[in-house]
Figure 1: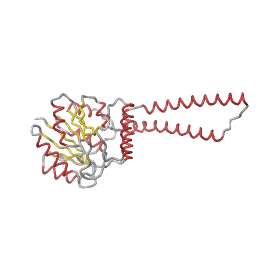
Figure 2 (figure 1 turned 30 degrees about the vertical axis):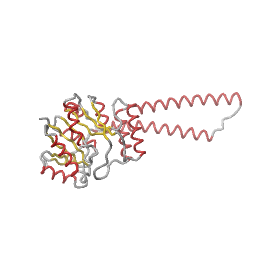
Figure 3 (figure 1 turned 90 degrees about the vertical axis):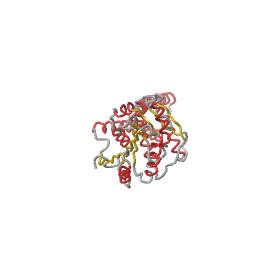
Length: 311
């Protein structure tokens, strides 16, 4: 029988875990033709998430857990789960039930029998999200797909079922600054997208504020595109050309018409404009340099404090 590993990153999910465990075990019972293991990643939770995972492990030997020494972020949690998974097929999903476990049978059929390497999910709407957050999310997908080679589908979730071959390809990418949505798209493989209506969290609160999502989107662009560097260079060239044309214009105007250039207000505006452009360019270069700096330090992406095998 095939073994399906379900990887579930958790951060302060004590309220959602009972409902999630009930739903995922219900789906596992319906899929009696395969075996399951549930790999929970406690990402430095400050509530009773770890205690609950220990209880579930004692209750159900299929439940495994990895507890980090501190909060390293969801990307680190997904990586740890993928590295620990033993299954022939690996699913990644959240514990808040916004990723319906009931889709797993269809996802398994698509990968096992229909020749796909991955069955991914995408939301058809963003009901329940603030309008400005939805707007920026849509803009992010449009921008990153134009700027990078990674195929990132609008509304795509991390919830997906992948073959062992695809997971091994993902694990071969050892970069420190990880953006999984981009990595999933960059490795390729044949993917079937399943659409579903967005659902609200079963319990608890989202850990993703607008600012965290904005930072995450910037990291995604930096991780899979060097276009911002080209944009900075092109802006510099255009401004230099414009400055040369303006200098010629005012020189001719002064020589022909004897009209001296009234300078102070226009000079201040030009200096501030050029200074802003320079700071933007330096900032873009600095962000890329900081990513390179973090990569070269070779720090571990996460540190494990405890697992069900080693307590």
